[in-house]
Image (tube, rainbow, N blue to C red; front, side):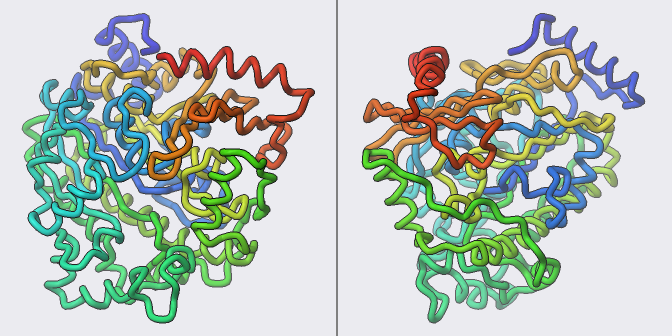
Length: 500
């Protein structure tokens, strides 16, 4: 960790620094509220400069926080990224490199360390700790969401929810499906899922964007947000808490509620470069062509990207609304000045950039994530543009709790929040090829360049000059004039990283 002082001295110094800014000092074991959305891209917030999206609660939170604007996830896919956040380790270290793999309950996890430090740990929403086989069984066996297997990762209280792929399985039972069943709304919900939406190809249903049959008060985001707010209101505060609220939205399929959709009907939406990359005839080019073809976006247009984004923004706005409710419950409880609040996502969403949707690639829409950190009571707002990684949030929360996490590769952000430490020289992200076959990508990004290497095929794939080409349109990997930069990025960053 970026820390030359003892942790106790450092936390004391940090608290003193915050107090000088008019912020009340927290106790030595402050609460931690960890808010996460699934597939929320880094620039889909008003505080990130997006004037088209309505995120007043995240914007207000950023107004009391340090926002790290250049944060890379460790793997642009749900499970790999979450495994890194849970352990503070890179993909090649923990071994979970694609979805549909089980995480190991024997891992050292931040949740276990919080428990050992005297915290009560609560997780509400999506964990995705289990691969398809376990996740497929869990809903049918456990309507309470309290899976004993998942709780082995260090969870005292669990209400686990799933994405629409799980809900779509015949007979699936989760807390949310049982809630809908009790209100007579389950079939209305299921009828709009991919594969059940009449007249729409299942592949198309994921990106088309539709308005839900359900009222806003019965959407899954509302269900999870209300449960988290109620948990806060009812918690006895006899121990410091770590509460991880993990929303499933705005993960596709893009289905927003009518009230949220109304905000964006006919709205002008910023659209990135909806142009096909110039792909080489090699293993990397095949991976990218297959991905674009399999997602059905070869013929994507800016108009279709904007329409998809309208519904994506609608889903994001409801997440923002429920975050506002959770923060209100925290204030009602009187715990606002004793709680660190962190907001992030597991990875981004391409939203049509480069004719791509979803994630699984290393363009900025997919690999960069929101990162907002609010100390107890808040601080004067500041945006930090230096490089940050998702696992730095893991290290930060471990630092806040005054404990350690064996094997954690993250750097605590507390010195940077205080303004006394520089950022990283390089950020890393990794991912295996589709279904763990054919490729293994390793990305290294500095503030100027982003380099991608396929270890499986010993193949340099991408090199972008992020200063001159922020939209990542000109791949310089085969340009003779940049051969030296490519060699340096590989020698100085990728090779040492792969052997770490």
